[in-house]
Image 1 (tube, rainbow, N blue to C red):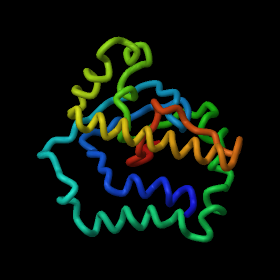
Image 2: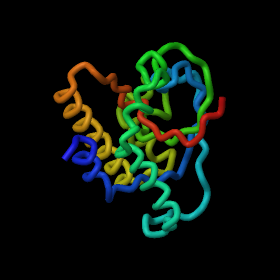
Image 3: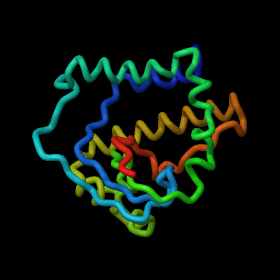
Length: 171
């Protein structure tokens, strides 16, 4: 079994509720340097995983299946998919769903006592959701470690604090 299949199988049953988004004005595409962020909380009731339509679940599965396509590596290794593309200075705007509460505030705020709980609460994440996100980040770290062991020096990983799901590029 390959690394991607092995590590993604642990995540199949994990759901991350997208109850907010952030408009981020970034100074590099990895979002490791963000000039400004504005959080938008979504209104409405909490949605359980069972309420996600079959069509949407199939759409997600189709995106995930792309990595198994024989032509995937060629597409993923093109010029835009290099470290410099994501880390060199570049101004832009994007709409994202951050995976960690530390994204919502400058680093000095995130280092203060109780900041994670306060930031998580401000965007409506329950303690269970915070723990789910911590577990997801632990899985990501384990995957990175396995990839680095198999392919030393091939990949550059973004900082954990900048982990996000891009909902839409804005500029």
